[in-house]
Amino acid sequence: MLGVFLDLESLDRGDLDLQPLHDVLPEWHFHAATRQADVSERIRGACVVVSNKVVLDRDTLQTAEALQLVCITATGTNNIDLDAARERRL
Image (tube, rainbow, N blue to C red):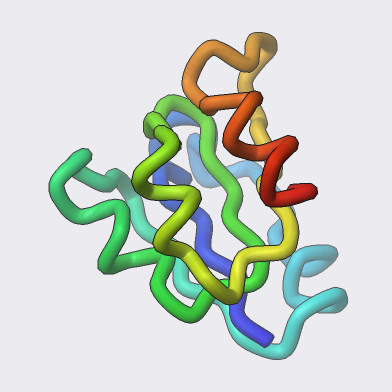
């Protein structure tokens, strides 16, 4: 199972303990930042995606076939298409 963190640099100043993430999934891809044009490619095959500022729109969510969970580290949810997430039961 693969987890992808799309924009770790947006909230980590070198002081985050990422061990709990490693404890729940055997494989993680951590990206400092992700351009919108690269989102679909980076989350392909991921079952868990973590995002702070990266937008997860309907098209992106629909093409991420393995996706089971989206985690938003921001205080709001405006960067994710909530209707599309609900439809996918994410």
